[in-house]
Image (cartoon, rainbow, N blue to C red; front, side, top):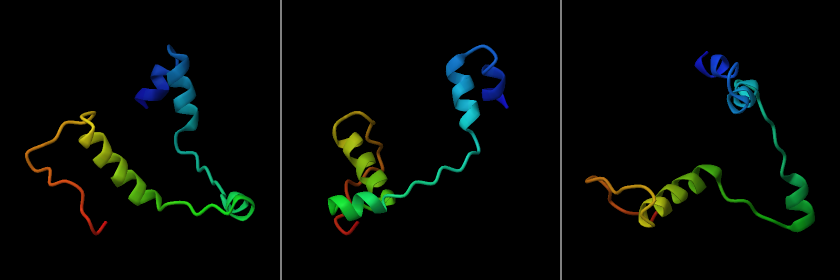
Length: 72
């Protein structure tokens, strides 16, 4: 609701509000078939990216930070 209201005053907010609650289905089968690419698991990639951001100082380390899980 707030984003939609902000869209009245901001072109960026308007573009975002138009994409809310829209399903986007993407198929990578053509890239797999033609380029012989094996894609990483998206959930694992997000976790690895978070670790990388912390380790490079982009995100702060909290007192509970334990580092990468070797089994993940």
